[in-house]
Amino acid sequence: MKDILLKEFERVYGSNDGVRVYFAPGRVNLIGEHTDYNGGHVFPCALTIGTYGAVKARTDRKLRFYSMNFADAGVIETSIDDLVYDKKAGWTNYPKGVIWAFSEKNMKCDHGFDIVINGNIPNSSGLSSSASIEVLTGYILKEMFGFDVSNTDLALIGQFSENKFNGVNCGIMDQFAIAMGKENQAIFLDTNTLKYEYTPVKLTGAKLVIACSNKKRGLGDSKYNERRAECEEALRRIQTVKKVNSLGELTGADFEEVKSVIKDPVLEKRARHAVLENERTVKAVAALKANDIDTFGKLMIASDTSLREDYEVTGIELDTLVSEALKVKGVIGSRMTGAGFGGCTVSIVKDEAIDEFIEKVGAAYLAKIGYKADFYVVEVGDGPKEI
Ligand code: GLA
Image (cartoon, rainbow, N blue to C red; front, side, top):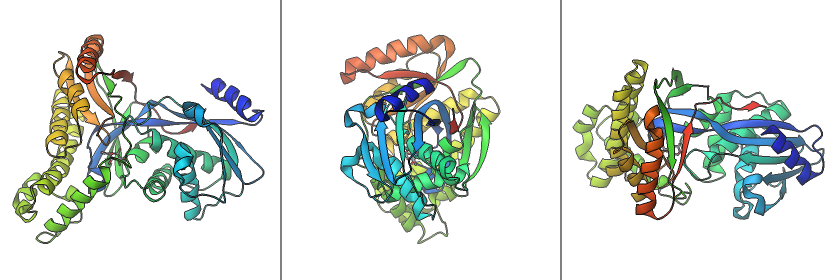
């Protein structure tokens, strides 16, 4: 991959002398969906697929961006004096947003750079290609300008740029999972305190299989911000009778006691998902630690049911992938992952059932939806690094 990027850098910008190449992973969330902006727990892991960036400092203030994934867009040029969101600038709003976010935190770049990006995460798939490029950019800035930031800071700055520059009120999960990724470990993160713990993803005799629905999803134009606002409204109503800072602080039993003040069936469903999904996540991590993969799988399935019925963020494409997956013997658990409304599912599949899984789920999906799903048998990888 390094050679491909170096060659492309030379082709695009004329020379690759002094170019350095960096990598940041994508992520998959195993359980704990739509809990991160509700002060709950999440359990994601970084993947070995991700985003690569070949970069070289410039002496002037220009920024030149080129992505092998959006080759038609060509080289997009701007400068460190023009860090404003611009719809026409497409994908470059992500790295630009991070440079802007650093400057907002008083870490100002005093020169520009040329960069070539190449990612092997399917775009808009729910595997966080955007957070991957945000953390990649943050890591590059830290290395190039010597900014004193930890990997947790890189996650927070990435989230800040996504919230304030790109207008998506996402939680911290994606950027955190990517910045803090560790080979073969998932991250049990309390999004309320940012306390975290690594837990080995030991799936003896089974693997993680991602099925990509190929239904494109853009967080900005999805109902993501609406769900977040619904949870906030439900919380406000609960706060009239109980002292609580987030839905993540409630147990299922607490919720039963206070739910009558919500007085809106839709808001009640949204809040119930946030509360019970948080409980499921805590239980699932305990099960994985105890090598009880079957319980982990059952909790994944319960998570998906809740995302479908209470949170209503699935849709026919994801529902088809999960229901077909569950028909295959050897599937231990299956659920949508990420924001939903399209994107991917993640399943735990026994080694001997993987071929049949891909064949059967793929065929049923094509027959019902009319276009193909893509399958990836993935591995849990490290956080950002220079390669
Ligand atoms: C997106 C957001 C995350 C999280 C998930 C849902 O991936 O970026 O912060 O809210 O959706 O769990």
